[in-house]
Length: 297
Image (cartoon, rainbow, N blue to C red; front, side, top):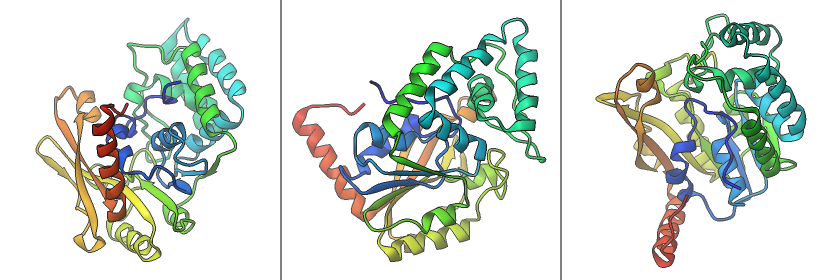
């Protein structure tokens, strides 16, 4: 079984996971993702069995409800998705807009799955009233039901009875963290979102976020943060301060998905900040790879 992913999701760290993973301990008590999105890092650590205890949180409540349903009732999700997907063939564009309108009235998580699978570049967008307003990708019909069923079953297999779901403020989730846990954070980027992120209806305050990281340091919690970055010649946001005593690593994220949407070719470099204790995991990982001549995938 390959590492599964439910849908393409703009901002997901699935494509950077191979660069982030080596900083995780081989074994630890629990993984906490306060800004989980589609939980790419959780799925990665579940696949490699670093831990069997996970907490994921996201302010996008329909997304969390979808993930919960996928993990706990995969057949229901796959069957209903297939039914929705097959109904689109007479007029797929009109069908998409009908499903979008119905979702905005009901917040049905399986309707949301169809929208995620069919919308432009998996780019989730809400208007000022909190209504999903992204357009359909007119070049495709979304993930085939057979493939989606395989994805759903794989996600459920990895996470069932191992995960707790929240849709709360990230500060509340960070209070749960204890020594022995690892926290991975992928908050909305400052330069893209400011005080508002169209995926979540609000961004995060940089000063408050730094304060929360200081609390984690005081408690002795290991953590990683994907935060600011550079796209082309544009910097996104303030760097995390040196006072946090974090290691700052630059990761090549390739072509920006937002640039792709705009028909540009800008390359993105993302920052990963890690607590110093996690550097030992990376060095051990590299030595293991060199000794065994293996490539991580």
